[in-house]
Length: 182
Image (tube, rainbow, N blue to C red; front, side):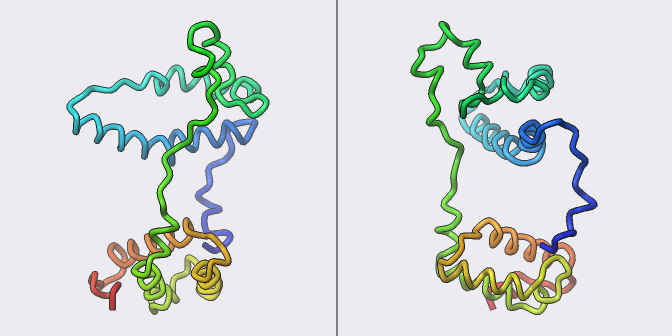
């Protein structure tokens, strides 16, 4: 994307520290909404009703404004919660730090022959070259580095693909799915 493209869309900072700002962003725009969709689909599939006590609005409102040292200390997340659980949870569980989020093999998918060909076709297309949203020469150069394993920008590549296809489907006239492959 061009440097100033999102400038007018960025909301002003509402928090004194970047950790709280990032937590709110995750809570409202990125991580949590995706997880909630997955959780809801899983619950519906198995016919169960789920409860998410840590997403209670009062709990969230109080914890968002806690000082940073209560949220993370010496590299340990959820510090105040872990302290509150002393003597309640077994220490092995209370102090566990090896949990990670859900990862996808995006880079593997995008490096497949099919995706490389698809992405090259998109990047070389007239519509992609003419877009105001990116610098085509820079995108092409970065993609070549990615393709030749000199740089891992799989998330950027994924964004280029999706934005271009979205623009074709919803903005451009006279577009058809076969244009991607040809």
